[in-house]
Length: 71
Image 1: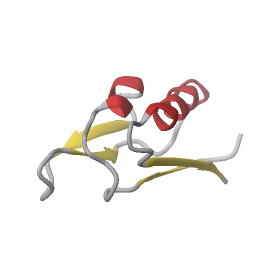
Image 2: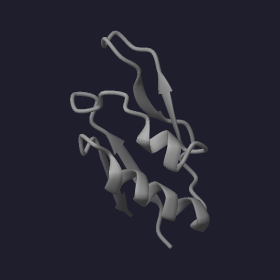
Image 3: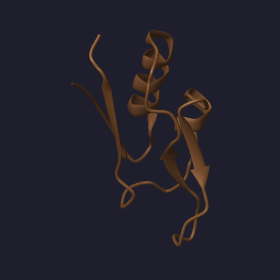
Image 4: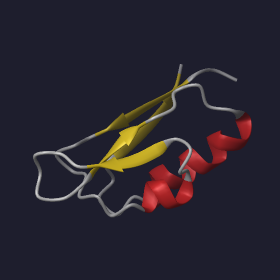
């Protein structure tokens, strides 16, 4: 398995928290200058089990703010 690269487009992220619900060990909502919390990646070394959760977070993000690629 290659390394997952997770990108959060903060222009699209509105802090719905779906990613945190899907993969709370990888994503976290944090307060920012935006009028709502935004998602940050808190873990970059993703296990096989977490990979499935991260891909669900990408799929179910209401604003399509998460992009996951494999290098």
